[in-house]
Length: 516
Image 1 (spheres, one colour):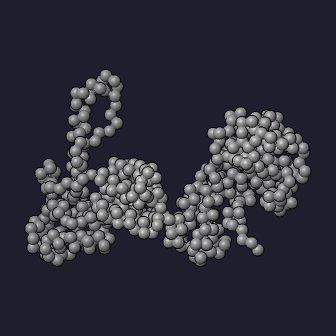
Image 2: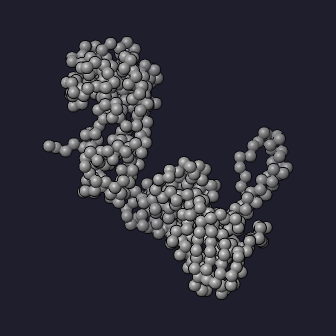
Image 3: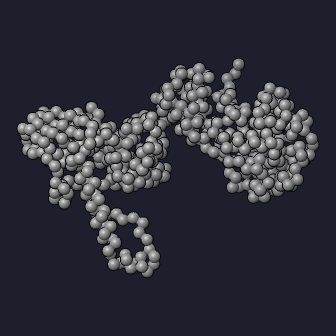
């Protein structure tokens, strides 16, 4: 037997099997069960969301030999012939290739004749917006006074191009983009039924790439099965789609936080070596920044089983909300400018360099010199060799650290130090920074700064003493308060507000932002 592609093999044949369009299915089901039938239906939506499929199921519901029903039997000759595309009273027309008025008039002239076999003669006109104005005018007369045995089902991806005189005579249903989770669940059912092994994340990657289209998702699944040649793995799907690994996107943002252009460009080089799409990479980077912003404003919205959840929450704490918004805009503009770049790699690399360049600058110096509260001294045993006297924030500022290891140092409180041992405390919500790799990097940096071997122990607990992150936050708030006060008391600003009813949208301190 010849192979049948999955998009055709798994095309829904009943309303119950249709995925992601429950609002349309519910309305049509009630209308069929209550015999409240309209003479013209208009299905709108992007490609691959089920417009033509829904039209065929509706045609079966109207012509099933068991009677008008929302649950066609699928076994009678009418249902079987409609599924096979050879039912004589179901006329499917592609308006993209039949746009002329003569063709529409010929079609409508045949509409006056009674159905040959079915209960209704059903006309399905796909991409109806492609008809000429004259063809629409020819159709309008039939829509105004339709014979009782005629049903029109129109489908389009661009309803704005349909004349309002036609729209007003149709019952309109807008089919939505299918949620990625619904598509992934359906793909997993298809894989199970086809007895094909697949890794759990593979279906999710395909669903995401399909952008709301079930037909595209099934076509991509067909392609993935052929590409993998066996078990459908995440690695194979990523290679086929040219999508970037989420871990690399995290590396990009961590490099931006650390203002490490070299690390960011290394990620770009790795992507180029794998032949990945930089347009897709920027789209995924923008999506990750959206997730970071969501984690900042509504952490409970981040699913507990979401991949890389701890790393996402760590980034949400490491980047200021206003910086996230700035990075998001830079990425969007970088993606829009990509076709204008000398090549995609150059456009992507320049976007990364722009992110690093616009990141707030790092400033150092003792906390006391900037008016901050003096750090609390940790309980001390014998001091280690070097010049450390218990000022943990001052020591951290001088360490050669970047990325997550730097965040660990900046968010930790020194609880106790003794000969060669630093005991640190970090808040439970920052636990993602305290993995073995970051602790080892911190230990190595401390050893280098102090000129001797040291040990580091990190425990989860309340952070009540000074940390670099806390001191910087205090300084930022002080800067913001000073800026707010300066604007509020500025005579010119007060005059603008009084004279013109002006409002202040936001106030940003002028000058370099304070960073650890």
